[in-house]
Amino acid sequence: MKCIKTSLFAFTALLTISCTSQKENASLKDAYKDDFYIGTALSADQIEQKDQKEDSLIRKEFNAITAENIMKSMYTHPQKDKYDFALSDKFVEYGEKNKMFIHGHTLIWHSQLAPWMEKIADSTEMKAFMKDHITTIVSKYKGRIDSWDVVNEALNEDGTLRQSVFLKTLGEKYLVDAFKLAAKADPKAELYYNDYNIEEPAKRAGAIALIKKIKAEGGKVDGVGIQGHWRLQSPSLEEIEKSILEYSALGVKVAFTELDITVLPNPWDLKGADVNQNFEGSAKMNPYPKALPDSIQNKLAERYASIFKLFLKHKDKISRVTFWGVHDGQSWLNGWPIKGRTNYPLPFDKQLQHKPAYESILQLKESKQ
Ligand code: 9MR
Image 1 (cartoon, rainbow, N blue to C red):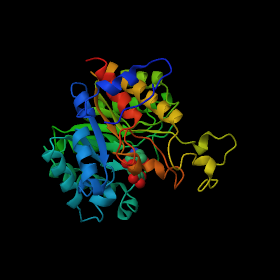
Image 2 (tube, rainbow, N blue to C red; image 1 turned 30 degrees about the vertical axis):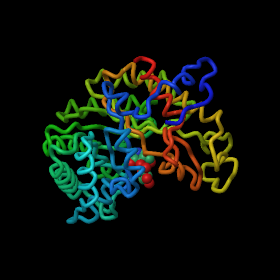
Image 3 (cartoon, helix red, strand yellow; image 1 turned 135 degrees about the horizontal axis):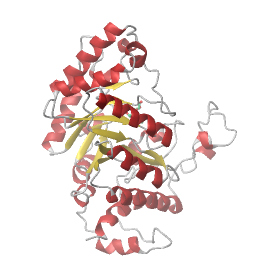
Image 4 (tube, rainbow, N blue to C red; image 1 turned 180 degrees about the horizontal axis):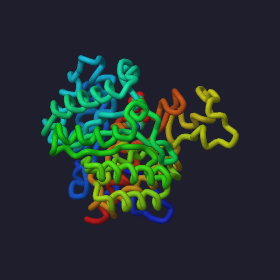
């Protein structure tokens, strides 16, 4: 294991000490085994175990998996009468072989739909689609996929319902229907509502209302997935903590399902910046094309440490924390919201080396032992 040579926080020398105390064979999943699952999102190549080094890292560090893309409807259900389970079969076999918790992402989502689905314009056809889609996929993996994102990203930022193709054709009822269909197909699978920014007050209020409504109408909701596409400075720990408490008060588990922390400037934060302006190729927006400076590396480690400290405080309410990708080189944040940047949002760098962020997450457990 690589050690950090300097102290990460000005106020503590804890991590310097950790250099000597952490064992070569330490891993995130083992360190947190009594707390919650530590997951990662797998690309198609990772599911197919194309890179041996990446594969051993995945098996060493993580005990929960999500498919980053291949289980989205455009891939699993490309035509009305055609499903394609070739890669999702491999994904599930991989999880079983390695005794991992297997999460299904995702059943009902307005994005990454197959072109034929986008053309569905009336309620009868949409109802038939939802029934066939959810029943076929969930039944196929009954007893093998442990939990599902049944509905993904149904909310707007102000907490109102997104005008998706599902809402337009079926009205609000599509939400409870989706959860009922999934529960019928696999009564034992854990069913989640998953979304981003639902730790922010307005959207959180919308998510709470949505979960309450689905439950009141007889749907089974076991958990809420807070995606966790976060930044160095925001959201605040206070809002994250309030979210854990308020969701868990609904009687559902809380999972952090797509955790990553961008270290790059955000075009929407720039005063007067036009979001539609083309920032591609701008050095200002891609400040660390070669390497992340120590100062930012340490900020990232500190941010991860404070987040995981909060997660540990509420481990009784948290079922799983999944990173959105195995290493920085794979992250979607290299291509969004501006293409062609170099971002550093995960605990492993693109050479698969532990970053100070990794050490800081492990250190929280080591200091307690
Ligand atoms: O990481 C995924 C990226 O490779 C895809 O291009 C993108 C397409 O929408 O989806 C990304 O994953 C998203 C996830 O499925 C749902 N929440 C937001 C994630 C990041 O966009």
